[in-house]
Image 1 (spheres, rainbow, N blue to C red):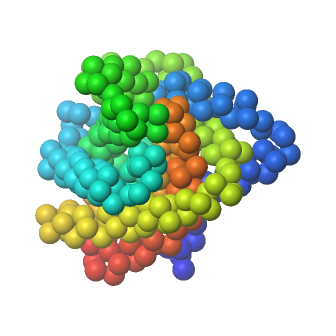
Image 2 (spheres, one colour; image 1 turned 135 degrees about the vertical axis):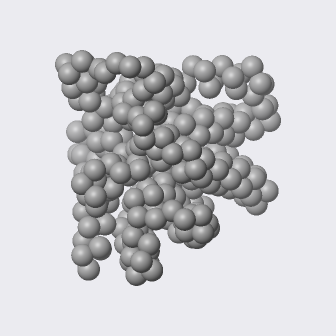
Length: 314
């Protein structure tokens, strides 16, 4: 029961902010113009700043553990490529492949994940190294997949030049790159700059969640209930069921396992909706998957923690 309450404390507020966004949208407090402005602001400003700060906090010299980082990167890469390959073969509606793939693999590692781990251990633990191994790949492939699978490009795949331009000009990837470079420098951000950037970064999640709730379209979401459920089960159960046993076999325990569990089994990140909308996708499946995985993860994360704790691995 304690684990369930803990998981609900971590996930339910996220869902309730989306519900609040839906209510406020119906009451015309959050019109479509506001939602579009929120999406643009988070995509181009607040989310890149948040990722910059996350990467800048990683101590590449003293805390770096290559085995753990490589496992995070390998599990992430395999997950993305397998899900994408299967989706291209099995999905009938090709217009939602990009959204489906992103919703199935892209975790709330940098948003919910750090808070979740801090609630357990009182510190970030292995979260920064997990972010280093997974988040850059999350975002690089999100850009590539959403470009290649864009509904407007069904019969005209983007050229290599267009893909490269999309990657090197993407604000999110630029934020990650800048943060990684900064973490290698022997300097720290001045307190004033750090607080200012942190204040801007803290807007990301509430703005994204309010926009998701206000923009949510029930009838359209019901039409995509099947793909949404599949994506949600892959995200909250499937990936962890495959890679957690591998992690145990390689000797990962305690803080390492919790970080991996967040990477593999936490809800679909709200920023995936922002990216999908800003890259020409409808966003309905993504919004539905965020809501579904947020609700499911309260139970699945509790279940995973119970299993790992019972086995003596936590």
